[in-house]
View 1 (cartoon, rainbow, N blue to C red):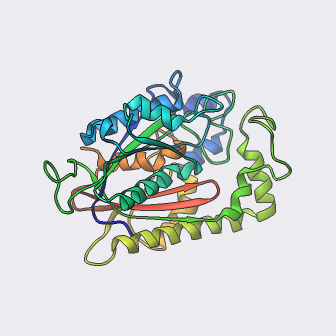
View 2 (cartoon, rainbow, N blue to C red):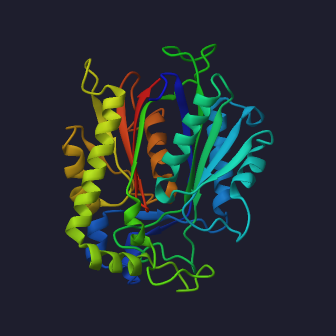
Amino acid sequence: MISDDVWLVPAEWLPPEAEKTTDALAAGRVSADEADAMGYEQLPVSTGLSAPEMAVRAGLRALSRAGVPAGDLAAILHAWTYYQGHDFWSPAHHVAAGTGALGAVPTGIQQMCNGAAAALRAAVHHHAAHPGGAPVLVTTADRFAPPGFDRWGGDYGVWYGDGATAAVVGTGTPGRRGPGSGIPEGALALCALQTRAAPELETAHRDTGTFHPAPHTRSAAVDVRRTKKAFLAGHGKPRFLDRLRHETTAVLAAALAEAGIGSGGRRLTEVLLPRLGRATARDVYGPAVAEVTDAPLADLGERTGHLGAGDLLSNLTALAAETGPHRLEPGRYAAVLSAGAGFTWSAAVLRRA
């Protein structure tokens, strides 16, 4: 159970360059059927900055919006799914140094595409262990660059965009905001955060024949299609999709119960989905969410694609925006879903503070 005073201020940093779906179609990188199933317009592409460098930019943006000096942070929690620019180092420490959080304790969070939710969970636990303590900065960043990754064709039903997200997570006086309250203007209150896992499904992203001695030993580029194809041959796609729907329903139902949605007049304005495309929203998330709420669904990945570990915080950034179609109005509630290889599922419920 989350205490009623946890708030967060999210931000994102996306590279200005992008690759268009129309160009990928023309080049034969995707088929017309794949483009229709995804329904996305473009993918942001970092042509120069590494993932941790983008995380620094997102982190600084979140700190600025929250009005929190980097020197006041207690911890940095950095999550990612793919290569961070060096073979043997700690990207979390780079984010701490780059943001100026030299007194914070940096920690890497590795839970694949559920990494933002895992880092947010760790931040909540940190505040529970240190009541009234200093804020924590959560960051995510991924860059799916060649030759190691084919953002358009390396996976089934997922297109990968580059970018970074962040959130300052702190505690403050419930029911108050602005100067003197400890809660920044525009912050989101975290009302619930639930997570479920099914580790028996981890072979969907692993070659089961052997473990490899070094990255890219098996293939020059990451090939998620190879491992998923072998996994589905053994488990069956219908049974796998049923499991995805079941776990999504269960984790969302638990989060709504924790937040008291459905009681006392509390209702969701919408449910924001992981950015996995139109077909996944229709076949997995639509039926799963409909089991527990009639709130509308939204997939905000049209111009970002899947941001690796960053989908959840990017969605929170849309909720916290000053303007826009997904801005969460004061006193209203929204849910955000997250999922990652392993598998792990999370659901968060937010209220405009």
